[in-house]
Length: 297
Image (tube, rainbow, N blue to C red; front, side, top):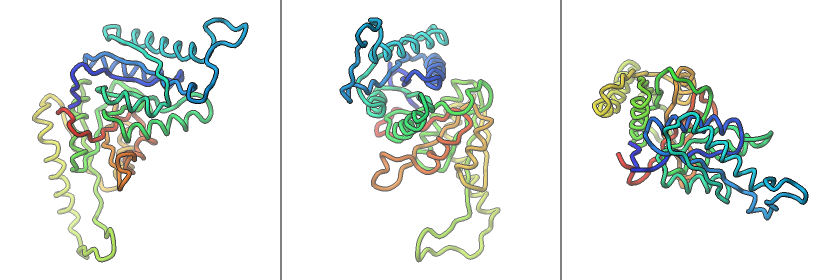
C-alpha cells in the first residue's frame, strides 16, 4: 500500500518527551517495514535572524545550532537502542516545521510526529503542525496519541469512499506487520435533509438501512481481506457519529487509521471533521491517510 522502494520512515523531533516517544515508535515501524529511519529537526531560528552561535565566554558547543544538533543526535541514539538493525540518519534542516515536514513527506514511506511540543504554548504549536502536515502530507502521517500499546487490534474507519479504501489498505498492512487483527468500523445515521428541496421518505425501515450499510462495509473490506488472508477482521457497525464511535473504540486499539477528508476549495489544506476530531481525542496512536495521485498500491 505504501511501497516506495528504499523510502525511509521519517520522524520529526523538537527535543520534547513526546518527540522521543515518536522516535521509539518510528524505529519500530522502520524495523517492521525493513526500511531506514530518518530523523529531522526543523531549525526555525535562522528565519528570524537570531544569533545561532555561543555567546561570549560560553562553551564552544553552546548556542542554538549546537542544541539542535544535540537534539537530533540524542534521537538517533535512542532509535538505535530500540531497533539496532535499522539504519538511522539525522539532519537539522533550516526552516519552519510544516514546510520542512511536508518536503520530507514527498520521499517518505511514513511520517511520524509527536502530539505535544516543548513548553506551555508549544503544545498548541506542535498540534497545529500535526493538523497541517496530516492534511497535506504526501505520505501517511502517524501521530503519537494516547498510549502506545503492543496488544489490541488496528482500528480503521470505513465510509465507502475512495480515500476510505486507501485507509483500509494501510490499516491491513499495519495489522499484518503487527501480527494482529483489524476492526473495520462503519458508523451510520438515518438520512437527513441536506438542503432546501431535498425529498426524503417520511418513514424509514431502520433494519433494512442497517443491512444495506452492513453489506457496504463487507464489500469494502472483502478485497483487502483477500490480499491479507492472515489478518483476522471484525466488522463493527455503529449507529451514531463516526468521530465519537472511533474515539470510543480507539481506547482498545494499538493503532487507529482514518482518511483525511477535506471540504471545498481548501480541501487539500484541511482535515475533515471526523479526522480532525479523532486527531485531537484518540486514545491510541493515529495514522491519517491522505489521497495522493499515483500512490503505489
